[in-house]
Length: 354
Image (cartoon, rainbow, N blue to C red; front, side, top):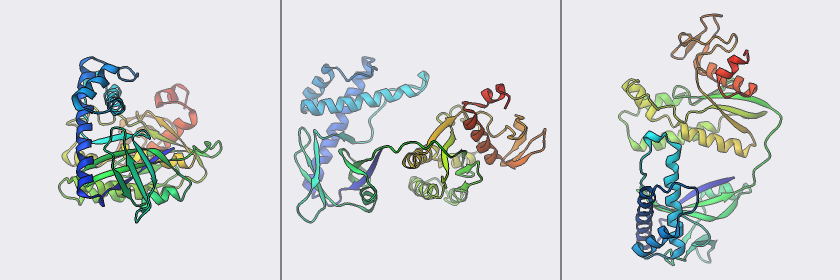
């Protein structure tokens, strides 16, 4: 398992800060240069970039061979990320966030003799500077719980200043073989609704409503609240959770929601919530299963009837057997059924007579 912890380097002197800032600017330009060349040559293989690309970077930006390889590798990863999108939506990406992935060839993390706890020693193409820093409350959470500091870092800057992401590693715990399987529905009415009745994050909807006009700063607040609510999820006695595969959930929905609904959806960080939920499950040895969300909130769990008229907002009433429930809880129960049956979608469950 790998986790990152961000430390802002606010104690750096101006000379060092400017030196690293200039390096990251050159690094970003180099990555974008290679992206354009890779896209022009239609080089989309999984292999490392050809030597001609790294040679061009060395000549154009005056960097070392090692750093040119690092730049080309990050550019290749950025280009290959477009494969996840449908062919019609693939566009040449741009490397807009100045963040360099640096391994042990370029940086050493070691103890510092002085008023700081640790330091970063850069070299091999990165400006040869020593950057001291102190442990933070967040890094100490990893250090106190058996995590090992890795040899790679991410160096970057944003509107808050220059930062370094330290990487912590820990061995994967063996997955649980005994316990319950629960479904979890993610939404903006309730952040999480589990099939065992746990409803978490219902206050977030009202918080977004009170926020007034959309503000970028408010996304950070919502994300912090989401992480706080996730800690309330009780996974005692659970061996696996089942989630909806929401990767393309917003695709094709443009113009189909009201302005208020679109605004709520803009604060619905389902991907970040899912990622953090995965991390929590990893640490607790709980498996995570993803299923097709097709009709999960329209199928009656007791009788299996699927009808879009069963659901009206949060209210679910089966038109066949009269079963009543919260629509999010119904979705979670159907996800649980998919997990227990070992199938991907309700189509397979129906064919199996569920």
